[in-house]
Image (cartoon, rainbow, N blue to C red; front, side):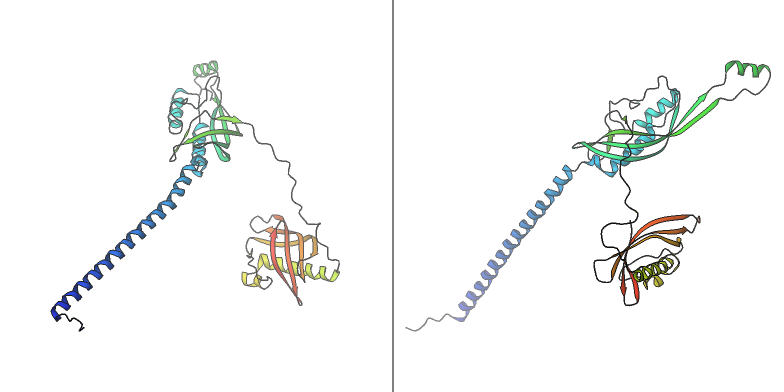
Length: 327
């Protein structure tokens, strides 16, 4: 049977329709793919944001640096008082910016029997301890100066008036600085802070019973008994420390092996080495050196004594410093 042939006009129309619908379905398919991809990307972004938001909510803002700064600023006002009606009102007004609504306006300070006025000299945060999801106890070390003003004797004032003399001056006494430690209960709304409970004094922390690290390491690796090596190491270190304190960075680099050691030129001057101990290093021709080095501080000309630990190496006839550390 002979294959049917379409007229050219009909064939052309069918071809155009085929191309149109193919293009339409291709565009539709690509649009669906794009929508799915955008949806997945948004879902991924939300998934990433959720842990961040959760982490932000879980983080106790009362432990932040901002809370510590707030506490220091608070004690500056807290330790500033005078037993005078006008000054009492002034202190209450200053504290109102820090304390929670309903808390005692003087934050626990009573003026009954008070003889001395106070000025804060210095304050540092000593410790921060969480007391809840949005609260903390900030321990602040405070240094305060106390002042007492004793009015002159009334009879002496009257006598001076009768004698037409200058009245006696009030007696002013000052003591301090006095060190105190105070706990500041801080609460936050996630943006700012308030003192939500009465602050209270605590005992000063005791000095810990910790022994100082050994200035010169006399334990561990085997000491070098070879007198030649010891003499060479001593001679080299005398040269090294002299250049370390008087030479340029370029001159110092000649004595250093692949390590950036900054020159102390202009800061201090090498004087002498004491308590030198040389031990075998971990690698061949390496030596571990412990020593006490005495320098002269260039400004005051006073002496400073520093313990050092060095790793030095010998390459042929040349000695080099690989590491330089303070104990």
